[in-house]
Length: 134
Length: 86
Image (cartoon, rainbow over all chains, first blue to last red):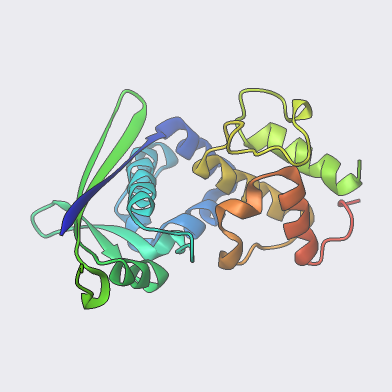
């Protein structure tokens, strides 16, 4: 087993600008309804949360080998546990890639301040599909 | 330069947030090497959809689609775009 880390940073004003210019076309392409609903009602209020979630999706993509296929943005979803901790849920192509590459137990940390949002993910990688190292 | 390329370059200048004008880049120059971020590529995609009245399928939402002016033109052509909007 090994540990991999993915990290990403996203300027919040870029997300706010995109929300203002493209509206729901922008949010629908990148975020699930749950993600949008959890980030606030106005572009300004939502921008920091959406920026953190975009950074999280990018951080996850950095630990997956996407040379074969690229997951949809919405295949990587940020949710909150009942205790309030952020967690990553993988679906569709992202879940298939993670399974085939032995990626499991992804931990997520989000932060924002100073005009940027950051996300870091840590994941365990075991032998994919039960294959053992020789 | 084709009218499609002119429109692509106008959109890149407006939405790609590159540190230099796209006029300084060749058709095959790598836009990611020139400073295109994943987030900016989403804005480029949405602006292209508006300009050419198309919608990129999810299968096109990969780095290769937006890596150069040539790659963008080829992606548009594969979606049936034959000319810039009138």
